[in-house]
Amino acid sequence: MCGIVGYAGARPALNIVLDGLRRLEYRGYDSAGVAIVDGGLFTAKRAGKLANLEKALQDEAGLSAGTTGIGHTRWATHGGPTDRNAHPHRSADGRVAVIHNGIIENFAKLRAELEASGIEFASDTDTECAAHLLAIELQTAVGDTPGARLAEAMRAVCRRLEGAFTLLAVDVQAPGVVVGARRNSPLVVGRGTGENYLASDVSAFIEHTREAVELGQDQVVLISADDIVITDFHGAAAEGRPFHIDWDASAAEKSGYEYFMLKEIAEQPHAVAETLLGRLNEHGDLMLDEVRLTDQDLRDVDKVFIVACGTAYHSGMVAKYAIEHWTRIPCEVELASEFRYRDPVLDRSTLVVAISQSGETMDTLMALRHAKEQKARVLAICNTNGSTIPRESDAVLYTHAGPEIAVASTKAFLTQLVACYLVGLHLAQVRGVKYADEVAAVVAQLQEMPGKVEQVLDMMEPIRLLARELAEAKSVLFIGRHVSYPVALEGALKLKELAYMHAEGFAAGELKHGPIALIDHGTPVVCVVPSPRGRGVLHDKVVSNIQEVRARGARTIVIAEEGDTAVAPYADHLFYVPVTPTLLAPLVTTVPLQVLACEIASARGHDVDQPRNLAKSVTVE
Ligand code: F6R
Image 1 (cartoon, rainbow, N blue to C red):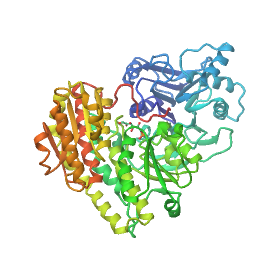
Image 2 (tube, protein in one colour):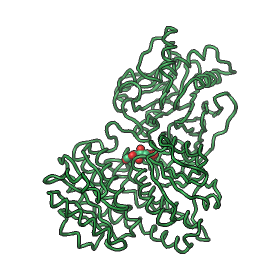
Image 3 (cartoon, rainbow, N blue to C red):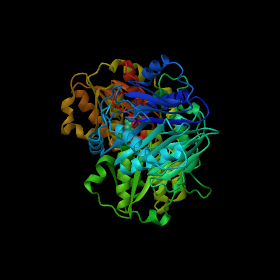
């Protein structure tokens, strides 16, 4: 959702804040704004992408001297994406400026109260309430220094707010200080030398420091050039968890690629290899990253629920096949946004696996908390150190994909698949249903996957050419069976979100129960075909489904395993992927679908990295 950055140090803040916003723009790009304490309080904000704000700032003179600042890039919730609704919002007396990520749920009540006291609102946002309340609290706040008083006022405001929020504030009377607060929404501290940072994620300050501090739930933090002071909402001293960021600024750059998405697709072999690195110890046992569960806890598990959203949900659908096959434990996959509302049956022998690239997706976080309230064990698969979901889980397996900047998830998906396979194998091993050598054999197959993904990437030129032909299609359908069914869903999701085209994924066997009526002359149907080896029966069934759609006029685009000649007569376009074990096939079959969606979107002239209406990391429910 929104991107947030704050700086307190000795250097001019404006460019540092703008650079941070550039790196955070993937979180939201409806509007952007900055506030700099510079003797007075300078604010500037503009609807549209960051470039609009930068252009407006070019016309301003003498702004760059202030060494304390905050900046925001927005994904609109309350109030449309206009100049007046862009952040920062100032208090009525002009003393403080506030930026916010999240939703203040009791904002209507607070706004009515503030308006009744004579305050006129300058925007339609929930955030503006926080700015006015902060200025009111500052009038009576006690503290030894102006910064301490700002932090005290922020705590008082937070105690009145309901919902999810990260807030940053600057006060014209507290130069050199930025105060932040968080509840259910991300905020990390960057620890520099003679300067400190606050941001929604570390990419905002990675170019300046790789030392970060993770904040806990319901905490307020004050940063100045030399100090970081953390308390809870009642003023009790609190500790953050320091961590080192193990990637550098270049990982968050396009490095010559036209889009981040293209770069991230190309990085997949490396990301898969990194996620596998060091997973087997000297006894052949699989290693997770953080485990606050005993082996006995895992042996007691009698049911697995996977909760996730969007692309992460699709990786969970693949995991279900692997986990049930390897462990023989029943496994359900649930959309996180639905999970807690249907009152699932959970207890301490249930393992809930929460999958999230960002570690901040509110739907997934709420599903996780619901599971914990019911005493279930929670294991997180996550790509973001310092985020909320792993912190609140009993065990964590990090995907080492590096930062994913493009809004559409690619390398995170492949690494989530790898992590899911590892969780399945770990469970199987701990429970004694697989011997160490059996686990090692699958791990060895997994170790071959980076090379196979690389081979697929080397064969993408024909897909790119086809994408240009399909750019004008009205609708594209995707079909698959078994683990290829979630791959079909993922292919359709990528096309929808990037190319704004109608696209749907189906279990191939379901077509005849209704969706086959969609097929018209020339309708492109992408068919993901299982291996003819192993579960050959699946292969033959899908080949029949391809014949069915072709008989009704479909243009068939077939992704099949090398050497699968049986499918060739029914393919208008045939793309081979390397021979791969059945359960691991999504690691190779997904890649052409990512490239197809990216190229169609680009051919249609869309911004591949920042599709309309979307934002990375959805921190509202
Ligand atoms: C689609 C996409 C989204 C995310 C979903 C969950 O390309 O990126 O569907 O997968 O919003 O996000 P995380 O994994 O951060 O919880």
